[in-house]
Image (cartoon, rainbow, N blue to C red; front, side):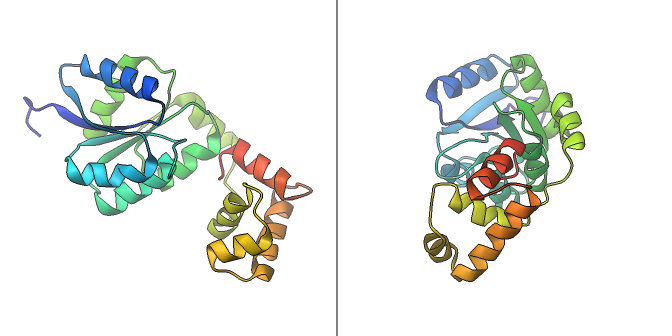
Length: 206
């Protein structure tokens, strides 16, 4: 990118008013251009393939796929794209999983627009940008005790699916599903799957 080029941004946010406001604010920056927008996490990769971008600005909570899952796809398929994750929820587990998925910046949505613009510039220059309050909370919160499979089973269980439905969705036996759920419940010091899902969500581990 030359000094005269704009930083090309993909903006993924399911709330249209928030998305339009962010696009308008970033559009005021002389060196930043929002070139494509999507409202679903599962549209991020296709949009980035269709319209080359330098930075992807992703909300966490989106239909179709979370911003963290979309970050993982982008990192695997288009490693040149820098991923910035935005969240309304200051959950420490989100920070850790976002970084594991390849995000290089993690900010809360109520940060000033100038701070967001500066973060976009910094990540393009090779820096990491992390909200300091979230960083401190993530260190205090410790590591996610759940394995990938345990998280996967809890995610499917979160909508009230039975063991049989979870097993069918994940191509596992019902006995294996029971074992994963039991282990997750024990690790999270909860009494049942509903409590386990609640704790895992609160910590940002799902």
